[in-house]
Amino acid sequence: MKRACIFIGPTRLDTQVRGAFDVYGPASLGSVFRATKRGYKKIILIDGYFGNVPSVWHKEILYAISEGVDVSGAASIGALRAAELFRFGMKGFGIIFRLYRRGILTDDDEVCVLHSVRELDFAPLSHAMINVRFTLRRMHEAGYLTPADADAVCIHMKRLHFADRTDEQLSKIAATLPNVGNTFLSNFHEYYDDVKRRDAVGLCQQVMLMPHNPVISDWNFPETIHWKNQFENQVSDIPDLA
Image (cartoon, rainbow, N blue to C red):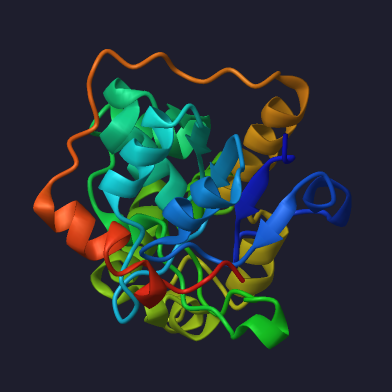
């Protein structure tokens, strides 16, 4: 049996953790289908494309589960898809998954970031809104931010497109808050809470320890005409794993 594979990009993982899996870049439409056809029995979904590149499809995850693949997700699009498909057998892990599962988080943009190209290891170029929220909470708990100032920063960042949630924007809003001072950005990085990374690491550690444990589904996978046209009949149009 092939060892597990993971789809990951801007969410950071230590080399030691990454070394336990076959690593592919962010998932897109067809990635989980390709991994299933390649023979993986454990698939970890962390990062995926949004917007200009078609996102990984719910139905290909259902297909993988119906084929006995153990599919789990966390941190980013993995947490989103796990919350959406939990009752069908996709496994979720971590704080972000639980927040989506309970309906406390509903917006996709909470986990979206702008990132660099593959050659630069998909390095993140903006902050995930969920990380901003947890970092501001840490700063408040440390006595650096009042609740009002933390709310002001949070509201400002949430109004922005996810690609614009940068250090520059953090400095811009901080400059309008008289009680914050000019050390805001350095303190933000000092207290930075990378929730996405924490959830991803936790899921990987869990998968490394657990044996292959596919869900026995109580539903039949519906092979619709659209499914056959999108995947089975036009499989050559689906990008290979990379």
